[in-house]
Image (cartoon, rainbow, N blue to C red):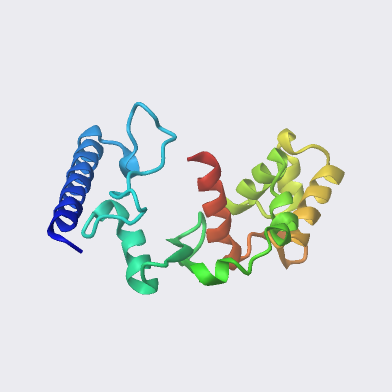
Length: 192
C-alpha cells in the first residue's frame, strides 16, 4: 500500500468515526430507547457502524457487545431473558442462540407450526391470561373475548400442540417455563 492509499484509508476511518460520534450524540440527546430517533420510531437502533458492528463501550448495546465478545466478529443470533412471571415464586432465566455458521442450517419452514399457533389474536390473549394467572378453561370462559368453552378448548389445544401451553395438573394450564422467554421475546418483537 502506498502512502496516498494509507492517507485515504485514514481519512475514511476518521470520517466513519465522526459519523459514529454524531449518531451516538443524536441517540443520547433524543432520549429515545435503543438509539432510535423521534423522526422514525420504527428505525433500527443506531449501531455505530456502517458495517453493522456496535461501538465498543456503548452501553446501549451491552448485550450485543457481549454476543460479539463471545462469538467473535462473525457473530450469531441469540435471545435471552430473566424475569419473574406474575404469581411465580422464582424468576425464569433462558438463553438460546446460534453462531452465524449454524444459522445457515436452519429451515425457516420448520418454525411454521410453532409460529402459526400464535397467529391468532384470541390465542395470544389466552396466552396472556394464562401467563398472568388464569389456569382453567372455566376461568378463561368468564371472559367473553375468548368465545365459547368449545372455542377455548380448540385454542388451548392448538397452543398446547405447538408447545406454548402445558397441562400442569388435570385441567390446569400454564406456559411452560422454557417457553416464557421465547413467548415474551416474540411479543416484544411484534410490539416494538
